[in-house]
Length: 195
Image (cartoon, rainbow, N blue to C red):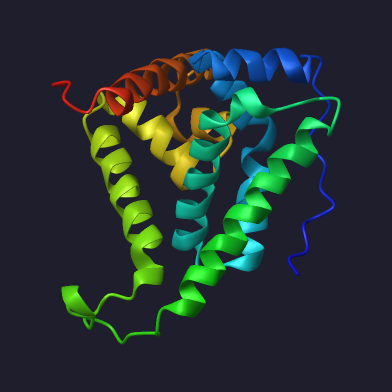
């Protein structure tokens, strides 16, 4: 159904299981390392399947949120990490395409009345609410952290590219990503927290 690119991320000396245990434990550095390894691959897969760059950016962000939330389920005995990441990516993209096919293609500015929303769209409405909640929390972050997360997760740039774009040392960019992801995780787990 969906063809994935044969692109394989560069080899990494960090043990896959150790990385995912650290991601599961909520270590921002581990999440950043996971993104460094697979961000371009996930974005490339989303871009091949979806109509627009913006939609691919949204989908990539959602895939990494899923990876982050399900990291404890990774089993190296069953699959390589790249295979597991791309399986989650593929499932997410298929779900997204299915939801799109259930919903009629509405013209710009049109939309169903609230009481006319099909039951099949309930999942999409929940996903949309979650996406907006994540974006709202990202907007609350300090400017460098926000900028790095937006460029990495929403625009598909590598940390090295972001470092060059912002003319900021790579170490500073990695630290900003780590701190931003840590704050973001805390705020998503505690919706009542004030910035």
